[in-house]
Length: 478
Picture 1: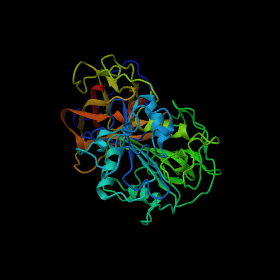
Picture 2: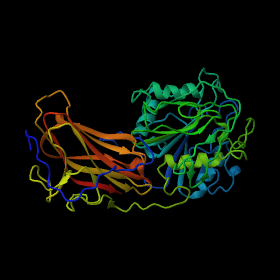
Picture 3: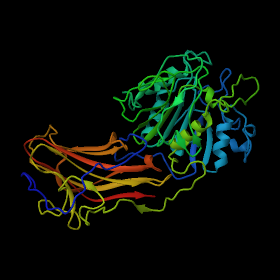
Picture 4: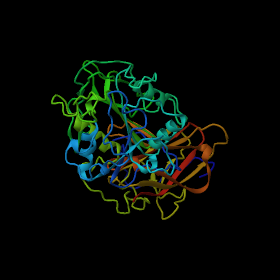
């Protein structure tokens, strides 16, 4: 009730608990964000517009660009397409679940070009050797922020194949620290200026990780043949995760392969281009067959990571999707009382202290006028390859009189299976108080193919109440 401390609510049984499970990615989505992900086939764009063929490099899936199918429409072996990355491309093409293209000009997002990033789910940057322009960095970062996948393949420091003064280490660090979207360590890692001559970085033990244990196989080791690593900074982005480490390293240093998220998109980093080199390609290049190295599982790592980045983790490598229009949340309007949801005692209520938007029950967080925290959460699985939108109606009233200080807050968050907050969809406070309910919506398309949980958390100060009232939720899949 506006301007007063609320009495405890009338409630049936309530489940106290943690709520929401999410494997995958940190998420900060504005209500206006347009997800980059779409239904299958999963659309992958390989970049060849930044000297990826300079010197001895041949980082292309096919000499036929933008469409490799023009070289061979039904490839069965790595030599059916010409390029040192042909094994990667052919393996994806053979599943029937991916559409592959190559970009040879400037990267754009939101334009009309056939290779515009808005037409794709994942962008692969295989050891770029020229700096991205300001406009390209904006395009790449917005693409990821709005749900795209970004695969960054580096090489050792000093691998300046076109002698323009920049190598992939410098180019990737420039992308992450000198862009107009977010230059505050957005992915939670930096690429190390190292040249590591050899090694077989080993995978961490995590049976639930979709990159290490995807539909293309189990990853045990990778390969360093003159490469580098990354330094992780989880304080900057809590979703960053090292998956394979240089021998003798762990934690935040020596990560040879790492994943992270930004906005509703996903990011993968690999510290060397040798593992993706299949030893075939255009004549005149010095190539190394890391793809088929018997001491590593590089093919499974590349393919599983592509699967995860494209949002195909639940079915990639040949599986199907079910994107029938549906609503996934149980007891979405709270009319069944304290069922399906996990909540602090008293949150789901039919009390007369506030009003439901429809029906009799609603969720009431805060409103106590005393210091405390309350939560509301529910777990759900979003089908792979689908677009998903969380919608809800929110009413906020308060007894606070300040027009500048957020004393009481409500956060809409995403957590992983360990209870770690990976990202925040939205944050509201007493400063957002207004009469009536306001509709809110958020894209969850970046979590297609995963189990996700939504958690609402209210925190009040010690004096005046602020009520955060939620009703008529929905998680719509198309």
